[in-house]
Image (spheres, rainbow, N blue to C red):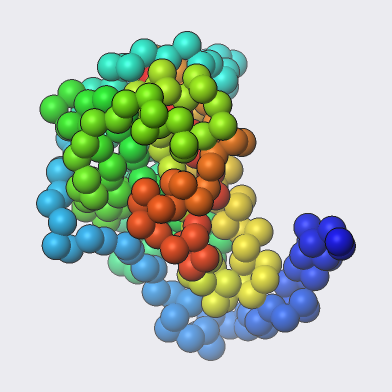
Length: 244
């Protein structure tokens, strides 16, 4: 079998080649699609507004202290901590332009292909355990399902047994077409880079909030996608982090 990772890497090296579209330097020639930001919402689902917080922390202290730490506490999250963690990892932080409000993470071409789903294994203050989608525009949680999670419910989501001790699994998915319509095959790379940016933000925000955090290499993607009811093709799991 050929090494498809090498083939893809080679074919996506040149933005102007490998089946990618050509990007005019003159932005006035760009199609409106390239300047349209898409927001996934669940309009018929209940929403939980997240509290507004204004945290402060020393950035360099956070960098020095950043660690992968799996000594989780089941009830470590409050609604305020969850709100701060999400907003300063992937939320809107400034209304820079009408069509492009700035977020906590950089995104190639401001395409923002990523969606974030907090799966709460235990309540976060007054937010019940369950599965949620982060509505970035409203800074709110779409309630996908409120339910309890026993150990045998958590075990199929990861290859690591210690995940069962965490408070929350933060699932990051990619809606690939948002980026690839502009950047072709290379857009897939940009989605992966953005997931890494969010992941580092989650680590640093966790440090500031006195939470433990661990990125996961061992997510069981198809089981998570089935749980979240996403197709795994147009939208697929790309990263997961556990917090507690």
